[in-house]
Image (tube, rainbow, N blue to C red):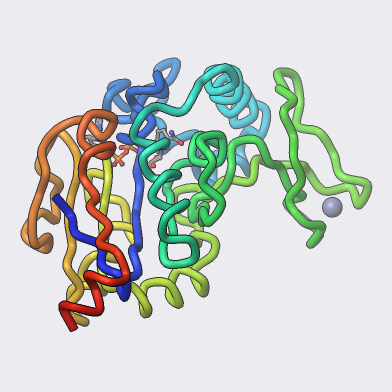
Length: 242
Ligand code: NAD
Ligand code: ZN
C-alpha cells in the first residue's frame, strides 16, 4: 500500500509498461525491431535527415496500431487518484499514446511527445493534432519545412522539463510504473526525488535497472496492482497525525 496524506503531493512517472496491458507493445517486448531495423535507428534525427519517408512509415504504423487501443485498469486507477488529489497529483509519462487522457487524467506531462501530434521541423509553429498516416512522402509545412512526428527521438531533448522540475521539487511521494530505468533523463528522476528525502515506489513485473533507488518495489502488472495500491487518508486523520 502507498499511503497518501492530505499534505502529500504525488509525482507518477509512467513508461511503456503501463500501456502493455492495453495491447501497445513495449519496444523491448517487441524484440526492439521493426521491419529488420532497430527501433533506435528509425527514432532518431539521423534517420529523419536520411529518410523521412521511412520514419513516417514507422510512425504511421504506430498510429495505426495505437488508434483503437483503450485504457486499462492501471490508467483508470491513476485518473481516479487525480479525482481525489486534484493538483496534488501529476502524471509524467514517457509514453506517446493518449491512454492516460482517455482514462480521464488531466494533469499529464508528455516528456517524449505525442503520437497523434505533428510539428514542422523548420518553423516554430506549435505542434498540432494529426491522425493521418503517411506512406509515400513526408508532408510539407507552408514554410517549406517538413512536417515530422511530435516525438522526442533518441538524442533529442525531452519536453516539459521546466514543469517536470517544478513538480519534482514539490512532490513528497514518487511512483514509477512500467519503466525499465534505462532511458535517461527519465530514469534519473527518482534519484532527484530521493535526494530530497521523498518516498519512492516502483510498480512493474520486473526489477528496474535503478531498483536500488526505490524505497519499495511492488512486483506485478500495473493493471492488477494500481487499482488497490493507494490509500488516501482524510483531512481529519491527517490533522490528528500532525
Ligand atoms: P521501458 O524502458 O519503459 O520498458 C518497459 C517496462 O515495462 C519494462 O520494465 C517492463 O518490465 C515493464 N512492463 C511490462 N509489462 C508491464 C505491465 N503489465 N505493467 C507494468 N509494467 C510492465 O520501455 P521500452 O518499451 O523499452 O521503450 C523505451 C522508450 O520508448 C520509452 O520512452 C517508452 O516509454 C517509449 N515507448 C512508448 C510506448 C507508448 O507510448 N505506449 C510504447 C513503446 C515504447
Ligand atoms: Zn513550418
